[in-house]
Image (tube, rainbow, N blue to C red):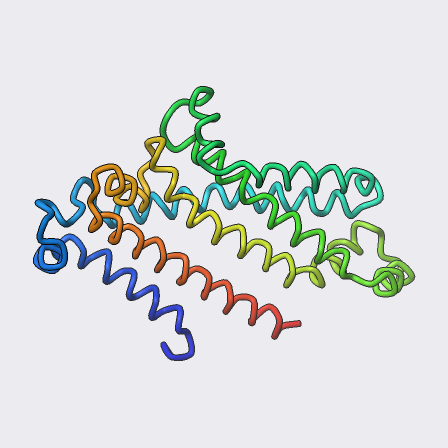
Length: 241
């Protein structure tokens, strides 16, 4: 059962690491004997993991809902003329590093989770829009015309033909968006958000390599586990088609 779902191994390893790290002082004292405090203890790793997941989940939900709506709109006749403009604006937003977006958001909304949510939501839009547009444009005109010939309205055609056929490509865009947000959420600790990036940021500022290693391992395992879960979901979607 578990061998059929290898992402469960990674998820189990992540859970084990979260539970083990608070008790790993002997190991990290041996690896980093020059450090007085080799294990991050300012906040529980379980709580940091939950905060990280919550931040990524909320921001990704916004990106998926808004990005999918934009993708549908620019592939319909009413919004097709705005497609180049939308793609250009979203591509330009990716040129700004996440730290710059956070720095611009802090004077407006203050420190904490809100500027992080804004930055992650904006960064996650482009992959979702691209996946939505590519998937919808991949539906052939013959398939759409056949549906209309059967008496389906344009809205019914979108719901029953376009969206199901575009689902695998759309899901690929969502997958990319979420994985990007998992990594980028670590930087949110620079503006006061508590995430798995907190040990990394504090470790970098305090020259504590052990803290950086602990945070980086958890972020990497989380990204791998979520990516493998999306891969399994994509296979299931492809099989159902």
